[in-house]
Every structure is written in structure tokens, then in C-alpha cells.
Image (cartoon, rainbow, N blue to C red; front, side, top):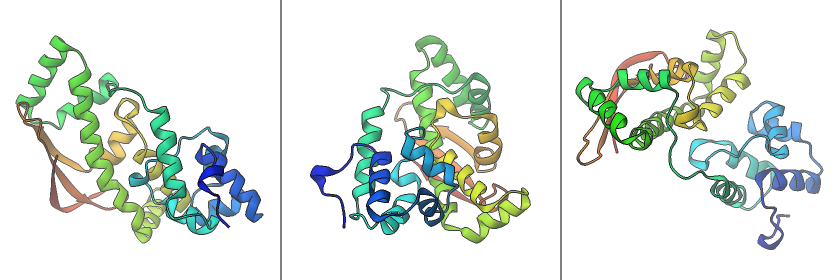
Length: 226
């Protein structure tokens, strides 16, 4: 049994709550199927956690299978909910985070970006740093498919596999204005070798290091251009 489009709830939390009751399963069982802590599902249902972007998570396929929903039902609900709550424009990262991100940029470009920010405000630089974050998040997303690597990273940090997965999932949903020093240390600095942008064309060039899910660099580089 699946919910029809006409009766589909307006939020992911409502959809999950309704479907769990329909199939007589618990949120704890769903959490186990999705491989997240139980609190993660409880927060989604209660509306305390926004649903992640479909391209930045692996939970929707697992939810769809467990709840026996239509193939794109949860994804469509998540996208609609996020669009409804979307803010206009990018907000600038905190000053110290911005400074560290610019320290990884080609020095001449970083200096020009700061001059332009002083003249015209934060908007251009904020949008650029959000694009930089998008590149790193796309790389980190692939670690969710490496369960042995995540388990190894969890063991190295003396934490659990579920806690490690949650940390990755939380980072994948963060925006540039909410980046923390811990995000920089765990995810961005180990992955970004350097970055630059052509200020005339707006083309962003990011050279990424190879790394394991825990963020420890390995040999090799990948290049991403946007």
C-alpha cells in the first residue's frame, strides 16, 4: 500500500509518521533500516530536523524500501519542503571560517575577493564559498557508500558507526554560513589542496586530495571545475 498524491502529507515528517502507523512499524525500526540513530528519525518526524537534499544523502532509498512507498514519494516531499523553506541568497560564513577558507585559495585571488567584499558587501564571496562547499560535499557524499571505511574511521575516533554516519550526514546538509571550525578540520581542510576562481568568468577550480571517510589524506588528487 502507498499513499496517493492527493493524500500525500505536506512534510517528510508527516509522511513518515503516517506511513509508520499504516504499516504498524516503529520509528526505531525505521532508524535501524536507514542506519541512523533513533533520534534522527524522531527529529524528522517532529519537524526539528529539515529533510536533507536528495543528492546529499542515502536515506531516501532505504526509507522507500522499508516503508514500501512509491519510488520518488519521499524525495518529492523532501524537495517540496525544502523549496518552501529556502532562503533567498547565500549568507556569509563566520569571519574565522571565511578566513580559513580564503587561506586555501590562491593568494592573489583571495586578496582580490577581500577587496571586493570590502567595496560591495558579502554577497559575491558568500555565493562563491557556498559553491566551494558544494564541491566538498559532493566528494564527502561518496563516503556514505563505503561502509567498511566509515566503520574504520569510527573505530579510529573511538565512536560508533551510527555516530560516524550521522556526523557525515550532518555535514552534507550544512550551508556555508553555518560551517564550524570542526567542519573545516574534519572535512574541508583534509580534502582541499587548493582552490581558485576566475573572477571574470566565475569558473571555480578546486583541486581535491584523495582521502578516506575519516578525512585522512591519501596519495592522489582529483580536480573539480564548476
